[in-house]
Image (tube, rainbow, N blue to C red; front, side):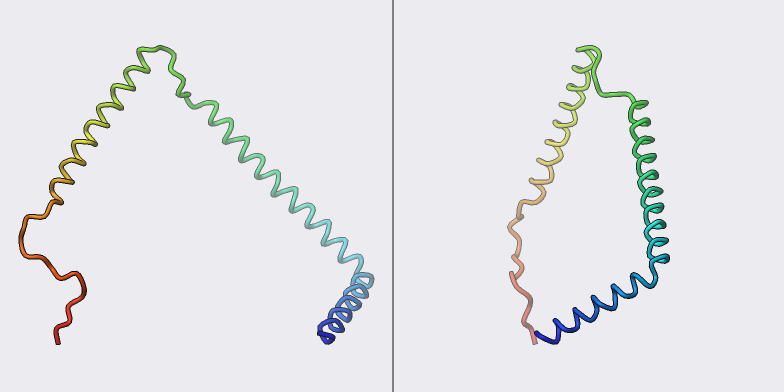
Length: 110
């Protein structure tokens, strides 16, 4: 425990000395990181703005007439009926036929 405390203090002192010795380089690094942060933020803002612009150009799903909404409801009901028919066919195909049963676990033949 005391070794870690001494090592931490030594690292802190050397870091402070290097900070003041290389202050110009540290400030240049801070400037570069700030510029990179602004470039990245701007790129993300442009991308999100473009996506929003594209979303506004796409047709919305607001139904202008009740007849159009009813047409889509009827189409959805037809798909649901077809799905129910398929699932009934799958569940009847999965019923056992009464043949010989396989062992539940792995075979222990030698």
